[in-house]
Image (cartoon, rainbow, N blue to C red; front, top):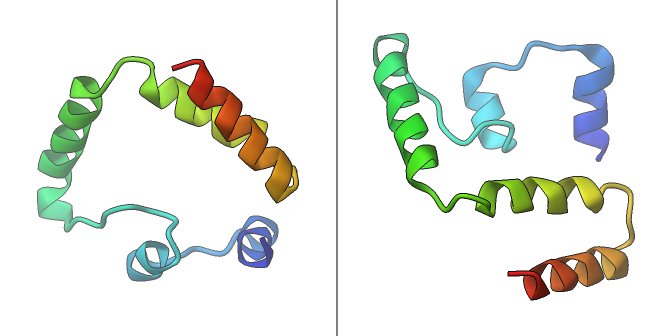
Length: 82
């Protein structure tokens, strides 16, 4: 958490290569390819399972600040709802 706290507190600009390296972004595109890459990502998201993204977001948000044991329990309970 220290790295993410430092980014939030210092409001430092992060170069694209570093953002990719630390997991802040999943992909980096050149400016010329940006629109095409964005459309490709949007199509993939639109083609995904309807509620999978919502459940993933819910799980991530529900486990913030929890212990590993509580996170595992939340994940298990979430899998039972599927």
